[in-house]
Length: 263
Image (cartoon, rainbow, N blue to C red; front, side):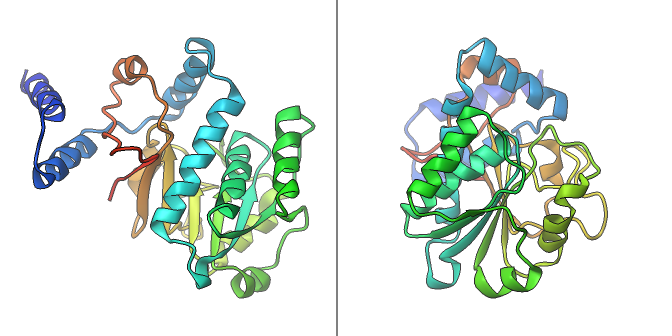
């Protein structure tokens, strides 16, 4: 009963005009009660977006990747030391988000370089790679060395594995995972830090330690294990009825922002 009253109170506050100070307090309340999805819930939400709400994969990927680029720019800005970015892309939709983000980052005065080792012949992914290369973004398959990453880049975007990942990491990705676990360059992970269990979080002491996580649609349970990391929510496309069905209680996006800063 008390929980229902609290939710009604927050709903009323979100519909009235408030001062900046009160608005920050309302957003804080929203973030506190926001739901963190488990793996099956995340899978179900995606399936409903595709099947029930008729979103296409490339449509959601474009929106997700765009929001990631905006969140990265908000967090770091295209300063001289952070301008050159290594975007590590896996073979699935998380990697597609990374390819989209790279394309938008170059328009924000960054210098993205894509590491994309395991490619697919699906038309969507072939087109995303072509779009990057057509904009002058280098897309390579050779794994960069730890020394090269630390020397050449100011930022790494981790778009290797999404919420469908289940440990352990496949052998083909062991070299890049070793680099990401040891690098001193700040890492921005998209949706979940690669190698983490989507619910249980890091699997050992050497797991990737992102400086920033951009959760998409809604945070996954592993985000509760973040330490000393900035946390953003991106993907401003979740229909209200779907939010209500899964009791997501997502925070309100401000103005025309494509992201919400959660901490």
